Amino acid sequence: MQLNFPIFPEQASSVAGQVDALYLFLVLIATFFSLLVAILILFFAIKYRRTPERKAEQIHGSTLLEIVWTVIPLGISMVIFVWGAVLYYHMERPPQNALEIYGVGKQWMWKFQHPGGQREINALHVPTGRPVKVTMISQDVIHSFFVPAFRIKQDVLPNRYVFTWFTATQPGTYHLFCSQYCGTKHSGMVGEVVAMNPDDYATWLASGKAEGSLASLGEKAFQQYGCTTCHRPDSGARGPNLEGLYGRPVRLTDNRVVLADDNYIRESILEPNAKVVSGFQSIMPTFRGVVSEDEIIAITEYIKHLAPQEANPLNNRSAPTQIRDSEVPNIQRQNEQQQKTEQGKKPANPAGKKP
Ligand code: HEC
Ligand SMILES: [Cu+2]
Figure 1 (cartoon, rainbow, N blue to C red):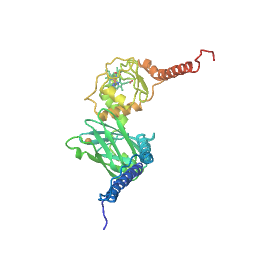
Figure 2: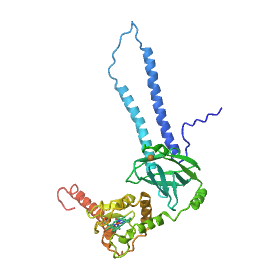
Figure 3: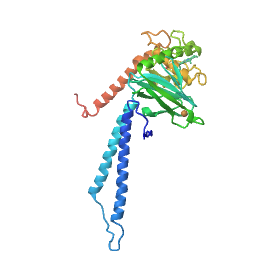
Figure 4: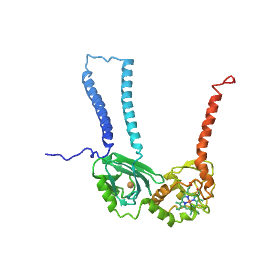
């Protein structure tokens, strides 16, 4: 008779084996010590049971014993700590060449968008043998992206992008769950991850009815919502030129310098007054409740694709743009120099002698 009773889901990602190995180690350690304690309790209970002729003997302190039972558990927990930390860092850092996919969680479904503009609901198609980074956000409450066969679980929060990554190793269809209770139909918030050979994946992408790449969808939304009225790359524009914005430091009116990443762009659209770009008036209206999370992702993708500005930008952004490009490294350099001179002054030359 064959028992079809799998204790673990299949291992279908590059980290699955490593996660299982660590987990197995924890289970073995826990089992070993539980058995040890249980057996010793029984053994001592019998060996030292009460008899009329035996008298209790008090034992005080044993330094050797205390050192042993401190050092051994310390060593074991350090092994667990280092092992876990190494694995965690590996899982938290997506490789540079990862395929970028975007997901939005909402009550009660998962929506995914591919860079080519293909969209899917409660299904995610990915190629095998290639790292895939999924950047996600929730449209309402906290959800959690859980693919047991890949051994990954990532909470998906409203108002902030989070990501996870994996490399699928075997073609197949795997469960996708929401593992964070998110309302009445939480249990129905399930889907599947379909891992395909790269060739099959390419065929699947081609067969998808994409209306254009994600960036071109973003461009459409950008025009549709009138962003172009203020964000034109010419001198008459009222808003900053967004070309080359992505991934660069931005100087704000309060002199803070922030990085223009996905979260910054999203916040700029939904809460324009939270961070106002230096040299501009806070005249941008909020698009909260107007532009959807999917559209924000597409617009961000469009902004990412805008080529960097030419050496001499035409519009009134030229001032802050120059601050961005040149002043930021200057500030860092100034700080470094200041630190160096301060360091140089005090300890190296206490008597005030000339070097
Ligand atoms: C009424 C004019 C106006 C409209 C319409 C407008 N913006 Fe803006 N936007 C601005 C101004 C002015 C700033 C700079 C001041 C600030 O940060 O609020 C800005 C800033 C930004 C920034 C930050 C830019 C940077 O250099 O750091 C982004 C991103 C942005 N807007 C995107 C959009 C998008 C997307 C839309 C359309 C959904 C849009 N804006 C519509 C005027 C506008
Ligand atoms: Cu959910």
